[in-house]
Length: 97
Ligand code: SF4
Ligand code: SF4
Image (spheres, rainbow, N blue to C red):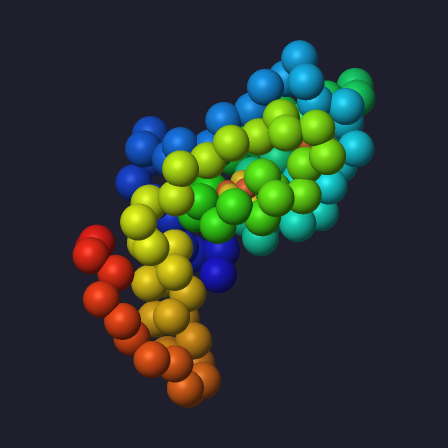
């Protein structure tokens, strides 16, 4: 999955460093190693690697993260990846890509 990236500079993931309590859950759940925690705060390690899956947003206990998913692009990439692996998936119209 690591090979899937959006075009640099277009992802919408946002981090409110003042609100972050440094729990590290975003580091644990992110499939693309977007974050690191240093000195008790999350930082972007590779912001452009974000695929806007929303896992970090759902798990952050203090709502320090936000993202506006790219209308199914991540979903489409995941479905393509599963299809290439021979795992049966149904392709639906995502309206993007
Ligand atoms: S939205 Fe998904 S890929 Fe992007 S930073 Fe959060 S967990 Fe990582
Ligand atoms: S999950 Fe939220 S509070 Fe925890 S380190 Fe990440 S941004 Fe900070």
